[in-house]
View 1: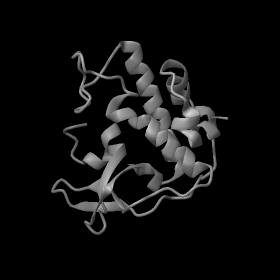
View 2: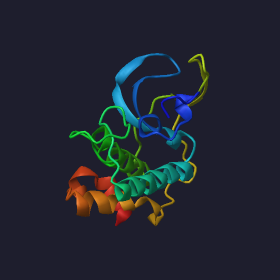
View 3: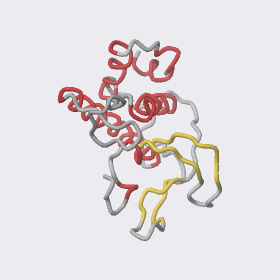
View 4: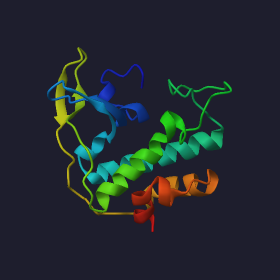
Length: 168
């Protein structure tokens, strides 16, 4: 994904589950916040992104593949991490964000690029969280719950209460 012609259209954790530091509509700097970018498209695609990340995480773990904690490239270094740990447990953070929105809470959102031209200019943005499919829950987003709770031993009622609610 590092060489993709449009970095906003990759399936990378860094781009899809983005740390947003500016409003792409105005250029205004904001305090960093995490956004699950495709939640601007609709929640069916948002759920699909979570499901796909879980499938890829399972494959990576089955292969024993770890990544550099900063670049995300495959690594065998002592500080290499698994897909769930990458970017400070970014997958847990976006599962919680998705869960919170899906059970009825509003989440912070700033306009974010969805298509970036090769010259860096923005061709299209997600200006809002899209409510389409809001509340439609399936078991397809639950694998991360099992990993964080039973493999890592994280108290998800504390760390991810909304995600725990949709799981329950």
